[in-house]
Amino acid sequence: MPTRPVPRREFLEKCITGGFLVGAAAVSQTRLFAAYNEAVQKAAKPTPPEVLGPFFKKGAPNQTNLRVAGEPGLPLAISGRILDARGEPVHDAKVELWHADHRGIYDVHGFRYRSKLALGNATQYRVETIMPGHYPSRPVQHVHYLITAPGCKPLITQLYFATDPYFDGDPDRNFAKGGVVANRECVRPVMLLDENTAPRTAVTFDLVLEKA
Ligand SMILES: [Fe+2]
Image (cartoon, rainbow, N blue to C red):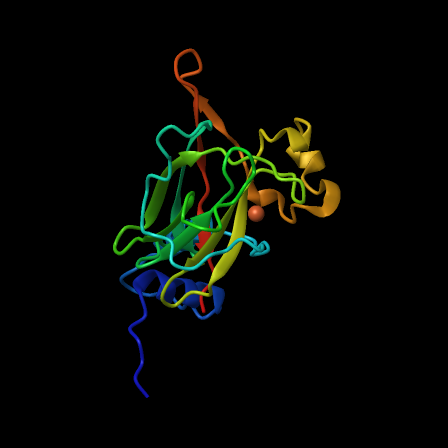
């Protein structure tokens, strides 16, 4: 049975956590613990899953600009890294995202505000879009995600906005109100840019995948 080469840091971690470090001549214990601590600090909690919802639609184009000329809506840039739970960047991810327009209406006939990004060697994503509206059956602004990558479990999740009036200014206390949002981690701060000229917003949302 073929064996895969073990990366250096993984090997060091296994030595330490396995309790069988016995004084490697070429590597001091200080360096080993430094490597261990670096790995611990880089480690990331997997992004919690959220429901897929009824408006997923296959076949979205690979597009980073989702804004529609002439359509109203507060401009929003969403960006983030694709990581595994060790904090390492993940390559070849496909990030699919979709959301409602400013009125809270999904495009079920076309692909407005829908994208399937094929990242290839890039390990970060970014889209330019608008802040989604509220819709009556799910009165929280949100963006749906479906992420796949080789060697990782598929992730279905959602992004929410800490500025959403639904949270009454206190997402820590109110994120679970009405049972709509399952995970506080998915409620992200919103940066308001160029307040005095052309208002626009930006949010970062890293996507941390579990190994398959
Ligand atoms: Fe939705």
